[in-house]
Length: 62
Image (cartoon, rainbow, N blue to C red; front, side, top):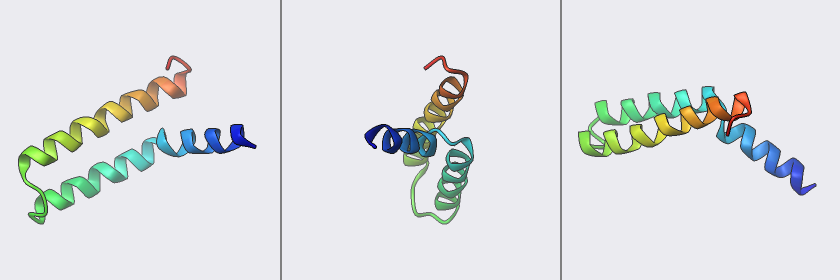
């Protein structure tokens, strides 16, 4: 049971579509003035790192 929960969480965390949606939402927040450029860059870097991890996870190299 625990393995299934972990596997589901990994699939969700490493889902490239979910990461792309988060990037789009982040850009929208910047455009709306909800965050500044510095915060945008910080969060964008984290999401891009996560996207790279997702690619590695999908390839079995993570």
